[in-house]
Image (tube, rainbow, N blue to C red; front, side):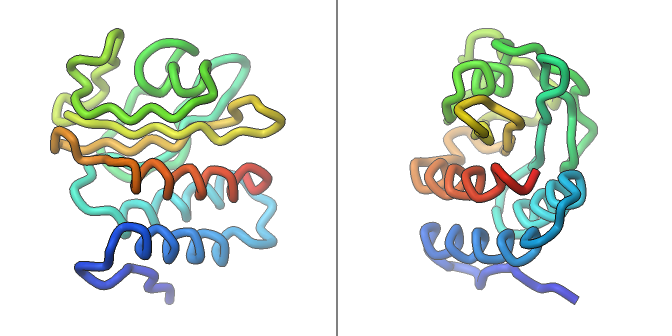
Length: 160
């Protein structure tokens, strides 16, 4: 049985270090991308408070397609350049959005979501997936969150 949760009150940088270690241990040597994304989505759900969605969208035939996640049902397909996820994938850049309702072209898959962090998983400079975190709290995510998820995405680039 795995129990990777950080202790309550663990500072964000340390929690993200522990998350990266746990994700590394769970995905090392596993060749199945879906299995790795599923375990990492579960880790994100356990590690990060105040989330209503945590998971992946995969690049398939030029659009983002829903991958493994934790949370409520989600949009299945997202065109590149549309919404926070499509923007992150098309620009190959992290999108840290304090208020999704102010984001041009936001796609409301879950009406409870108020803030979002989307980090592209890049291989050879192109997005192969995105890691998407949603929260009902406005301003939930900060630069510590972005840096932690960017480190996770870099580690996963050859494991998904």
